[in-house]
Length: 239
Image 1 (cartoon, rainbow, N blue to C red):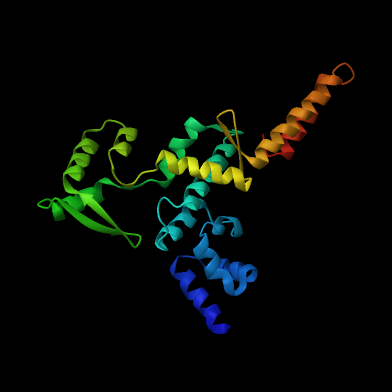
Image 2 (image 1 turned 120 degrees about the vertical axis):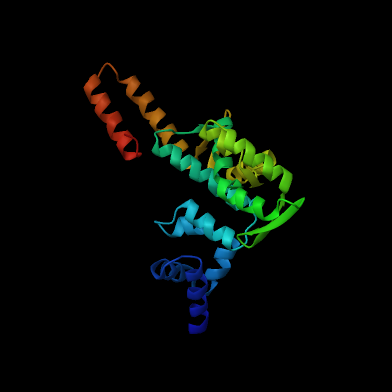
């Protein structure tokens, strides 16, 4: 048992977790800790308060998870909705959510990486690079074109789009993640809008409260109604 626990500590420390994080995981998952993390590294976001999606994603990729893994895309989708909620948005239209998720999960080379690879391989048609224990094939002519377009881009968005993509989110992968999260009860997809389930339920409760208050608008003053609404907003994390 001590040998297994030591193995868990050694493995997870190598992925950047600290001893406090590992202790928390062992207390819940016992000897199955590594098995559960290998099955879905993104449980780190759920089990460790300070562990963001980006930290968990770094661990997941280092563990060899495929960039198009359904759990990865699903967690990225929830991360985007959570981030949007912090900005006061209860939902996101799916046409706006897709590019946000894509920006989070796409894997690309920055300018310095592109130039370094090109200089080492400019007389070849293609080369291979190792990224997060996964091999990617680079087309040198495409890489050269990306470098040129990047350097001649005038805006940050243009530069971003002209990086060399090792992986780019596909429509079908995004749709699969949406359907999976719906089945899991994590999101609600309604009228082309995507909600986190807890936010959607809060919105329904909020609407019902307004309906009830509306029935008694002649009894209660405007000031009292606004006070009640402010309290509801506060309880549900809105300011």
